[in-house]
Amino acid sequence: EMMKAAREGLGDGPILIAVTQLTSTSEEQMRDFQNIQTTLQESVVHYAKKTAEAGLDGVVCSAHEVAKIKEATNEDFVCLTPGIRPAGAAVGDQKRVMTPADARQIGSDYIVVGRPITQADDPVAAYHDIKAQWNGQ
Image (cartoon, rainbow, N blue to C red; front, side, top):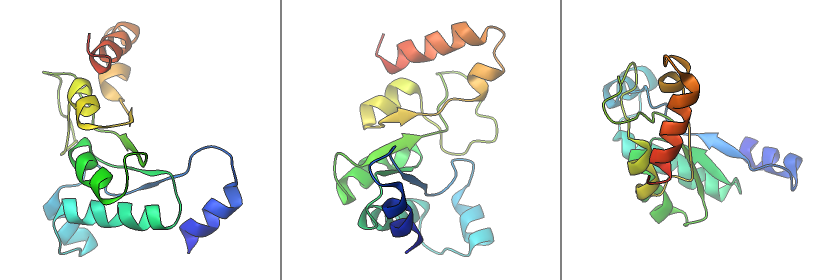
């Protein structure tokens, strides 16, 4: 009901998305801390279906779940994917990561990139490199 109310309150403004499971969450952590006893992928897809049923535009999810989410909802359902790392970059605290090129190929609509840009010696160059990878260059 909360998501439906948010959708109604927003009207025709910007897109409205919900968070599924953080990309820094492992399946073991989900089971232990959240007491969810399904697989991580099943949990994420379940949240995505509920989000679509509430009329929201999409979800924040790992790129690893994008194909299953689009299959369970529709191709226009937005998947915004954090945990994006250029090939060879440090994974850090992220558990479910993917390269920009692979995320785009698998169907991610938008990517979120943090530390590979903010902690780079040359953040502008890192941004342009990641953008080129996203664009298949």
